Image (cartoon, rainbow, N blue to C red; front, side):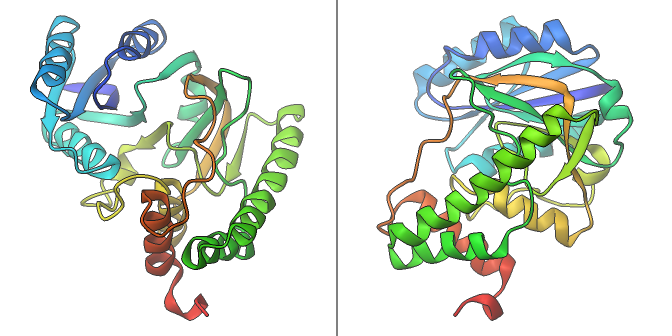
Length: 271
């Protein structure tokens, strides 16, 4: 069966945000199919997600809780095996679509698409990184590796200043879309042509955090462009990032940053 759009929504434990997310998809996106992937917490919550999926005409997968990448990979895998499609959208369950103009996708075939993403407080989340910034990325890596908050905050601040300034210019410009280096992971749109190039899009060694940075390196390596568009707008209820996570080397954020940097950037840059 063919759909223009497949949505993969990875859930965990709480079902409270899911109805708003699914409702906004149904209200704004025609010719779409929704796959709910549940990272299992317990039998009770799995049963609740399954019942919701069955009642609302969604596909349902119940998978072990092995992280963000693992769950989304299973959803993509299921979509490839069961449907033909043009675009696949990875969405958090706490995302609500406000505007979905299909022409902005039609004009950017073969490219990864990032929407304008706003939090409840009005903070813009996209793009994750506007441009590639090796010095800032090195500072973030070293901050986590050495458990040094000064280095970590310096790297984060450098990326934030560039992002905020460039985003302001873009929003005031007449351009409908602009290339960016990394898209925020709460809602991201992938063309089938991109997904077909990878057996698994996400690296399952990363349980949570920094998938955006990993994918940015992966896409650059494979000459895949990412576009930020004004034609698609979403609300992400989780208010911004979780902040700077623990840097004791045991946190998922620290482990993910160190892993992707050493894998994707290369040992030659690590001094």
